[in-house]
Length: 418
Ligand code: BGC
Image 1 (cartoon, protein in one colour):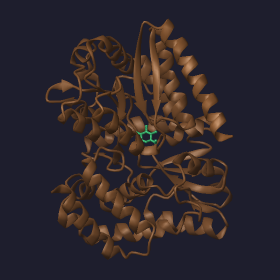
Image 2 (spheres, helix red, strand yellow):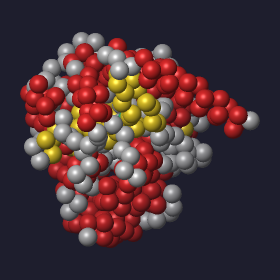
Image 3 (cartoon, rainbow, N blue to C red):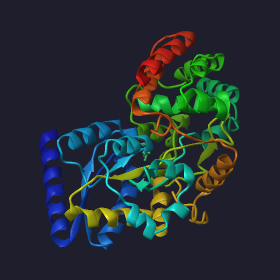
């Protein structure tokens, strides 16, 4: 049965894209992991924009939040000498592919459209490699948000927590009332998203920079890091018993339908809130994860441009130019939940959470507290990131002590850096 359904679906997709390519002068093949409802809706904004410019779209979706599965597929495609026209990539991936010499050069489009003037410096650090623009940034996400079901908090007489102590007190109260305190999916990247928040919330921006971005052994082995794992242990007691392996959007659904009170997740969750016809900032509150107000973890989705044949280049350039247009950045990010990767888009049409993000990022950048997210490919190389994921997830799913976790973290990170 499942097989029949799938083949029908594949036949429909093939048919539709055949029509598409016959009518379109050129085509891009794009590998991405935007398969959840809100993500797919945002992607449609891009597909439609390109269609209006007569550029066809060949879809290469690889499901899996955070993009791990997509990254594996991408490696296989490149190894087989068959890269897509462009692929969704997080910052470190973009840098790593560029260092391998696999990417082309978007500098002519970038110069023509003045990207250097409008793209924030933190984003340019990844987009420009060796003086060349190798990817087009489509957004800026903030992973350090705490999303709160307002109705539940009202009914329980709770206010949004601003510290981890307050968070634990609120979570205890929800638990007593029979509500799952934390909507969570037990997948390594989701555990790591929460871990990033706790490191930043307990240690502050300078500690995050030392421990995560610089992988400083003293910081990784410090008492502060022991406290971080203590808090991770508390959090592992606030998830429901079916959390293991759950996709992030299903965890968000628990928050929206009132099964859970809170979720620590990036603002792609806002895409789901909007799709459920709920109002971000009213029905579902958005506050900085406990202890992280004033700091901003970020990750950007880039479309990395592979070094494709001359024939495919015009479509690739059109894709890049379209992605970076001011109008597109607004339309896309209103749906995706992120904010534009350009500084000149007005906040007026964004909801309260988007406007807060736009203000907070400026404040954080001024205070040296705008930091790349480790969980989302902007804080560490992929090998160190993997080592961190492993320890965080092992700790979350066992009764490992905080002290042991800290020691394992040091060993794992040290060997990943060799
Ligand atoms: C990406 C988002 C995506 C999320 C969940 C993040 O790494 O930057 O665009 O929505 O993963 O899949």
